[in-house]
Length: 624
Ligand code: ADP
Ligand code: MG
Image (cartoon, rainbow, N blue to C red; front, top):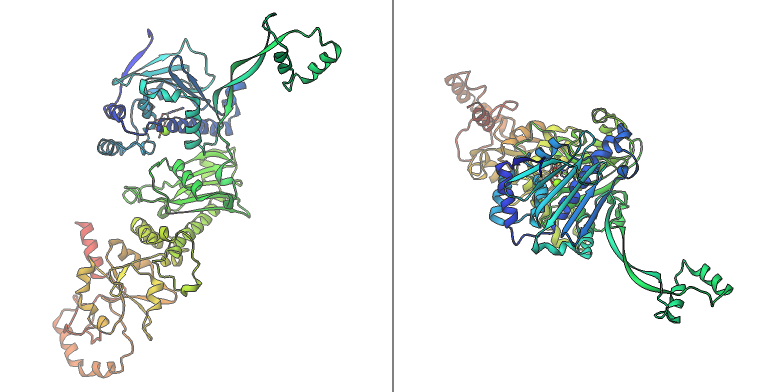
């Protein structure tokens, strides 16, 4: 085209496109769900803007927030149109030519090795999946702030953008035209498209229509000699024509004009989805399968893995909202890397069914940022800016309730896991049907998200005890498995007051520690804390169920009752005095007789409120 401006794709995009074009065995169907998801995002955006400015929606058809699909067999073209926010020229260049999100390289590498495109939507490059089925793509777009433009590319390393002077004006929104490859002609079949929309786009909250063909009977004047009685009686049986037909029959049967019926193909918009949002339904009416599918569409993770757990509830009272929370099967690879500098929660916020944001910081505390899901609030105001919403007082209440429900949900993973210690009598434990599926789930959870629970204990004083219940660790008695504080307490020796633990680099190293000699011999259980975060954790976790924690490498250890201690102390008084004098006061606070050892003659113990040796080691590593 004359007025086209040429651009080159960013190298990474080109590479990605090459891979897509050559992924012969990939599931090509996914392009449709990516396009629909983009259309839905664009509709969400304009709807959000319209909350504070109604004008942006425009008038007439332009204001209809919907998605339309059309098939053109002659041109071998599939087109998808939305009345979303649209793209300016600049948007087209930026969004459909470069990759913004980081981690895309990793995705490209993964794709090259596995050929699995299922995660494409998660990486912010879903659009390019159109080249699975098309060799030429046009994107026509109209944004309120700009003219209508056409973006086009044959995936040959370049794309072109022209001001659109030849297509029908869109009003607002985007139309994507896929010129299908020879091998992808199946996507011109209505039935195929209908099936795919049903399968992938069940949870899209905007109506999706297809320009569907319909065979209808129409009456045409019959040729004199061809007409027969049969045909004319046929035509009068059509429902709409009935009254008139009867009348005319009554009046004059003879003079009735001769007609015949022929099949004709007409087209009309057929609605493909029902937009009743899943979270508005009653949880008892939603099947497990539906939750899993909803999870996949929400997270754009279309791998086969199921979420570990979910919770769907309605909060009532001063602040009303509905929410669905999921524990994803795997933690994102950078969960803890970005922990301290990001506040991003993965919950989508809706206000009265209107999507507001998926980057809302105030919904969940950082330590629960691994959860996915959504919140739809009836209490929050709709027509205010994001900033004002962010500061709204109900958010605190919502957050508090979400945390509670999230912790209940996590607790349930443990409670339903037959491998977990429940402390209850076997017969009191409710058995559910899918026990095999739940077996070992909590260990899985712990391996993925244990650190988050620990960070929660450090950060969230209100829920500290609830979180401590979720804590898992190994101990001198756990035999390589994970155990819990409840289990520990249930096995405490009579007369044992404190919960014993020791911190260090590894279990293997700790097992040899002289601090454990006596405790082991006397059959006390000692918890091994070997994660660097554990040291911090134990500065916040003072007690559990009325029991104090005692670091066995610190002063203050009491092992049962020792009747001889006073006697011993006295008889060794001279020796301890001598030691104290020999060692300088800067080096040791005290020299004491203790009953913590068995074979080892003496050991250096740290003071009760100071750093443990392990903490000292950690701090040194940090300053280096
Ligand atoms: P993602 O949707 O994850 O951002 P995509 O590759 O699917 O990644 O799309 C890239 C970007 O292109 C989107 O973020 C959006 O800005 C823009 N885009 C794609 N499709 C549309 C559309 N139908 N309307 C408006 N913008 C769109
Ligand atoms: Mg997308």
